[in-house]
Image (cartoon, rainbow, N blue to C red):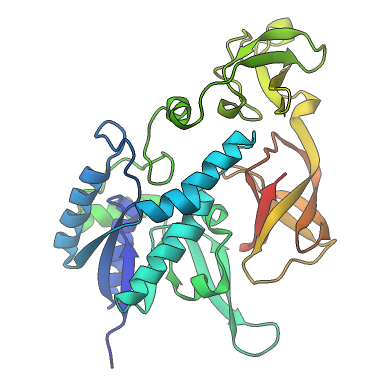
Length: 367
């Protein structure tokens, strides 16, 4: 019987390292693949790709697997980064990790892995995939699941994956808790066991975000106004650099939790056409809440939309508790999601992702 091959996306972090370790122990022929996806201003200060590659090679040597290095910088720039900039220019706040997964990690990477003879690909994402009988009774359907470790679940970022991509995907950390991942790495002698998790933009690294954006989208000064009184409070240096619910970096005074006239200011609205940033005082100001939203650019994991007027759970940002909601209208182009309780700082450009229990159904871009 032919040994089955899995190509594992390895980043130099502890999660992908342990994913490769677990698959090797399960009897797979494991090939590590290190992706180089960013070349602009790739300096030691912000982009850790050189050290990451050294870490991958060290882990591979310890585990006993081969590693290939591939450059997807062009694909990343065309499919992810250009869209990222377009969205920011339009006054929205995109989530590059969502696009990065569907376009790079599970498209360019998958295509390349297949040329290496891969039966499956794997990543260190905290999520799961399972086969269930398809509704037609013919064949199987692949479901994207939340991870067992709810504090690390990354299904939100994977919600644009389709059936073809999921059919080839393995997530070895689906049922593993982060604390156990680090212990496994330590016990196996992997030197990345205590390596800090990356929190920067997908493949670009951890750098001062505003300074980074300014390099591509130059400042455009405009007014900051009080939404309630229309009073001019100050000046912003560019609509691009601000997002709904933002408190820091406005430079108009206000202290978090102080209450009354000295309470903190939050971004509540963007008038892109007039280049005016509207703010309100207080975290719980009504203007910061929305009871419903419209989403476009829809993507459903099963290839079909969820039922209208059913109750689901939704997230409008990654670090959010599941919020009960109803899908009121679903079309080919858009859907309307109505929440049981108003949601704070629902941000255009971010993704709304729907769940039925542990199953991630997919979602769309908030308008």
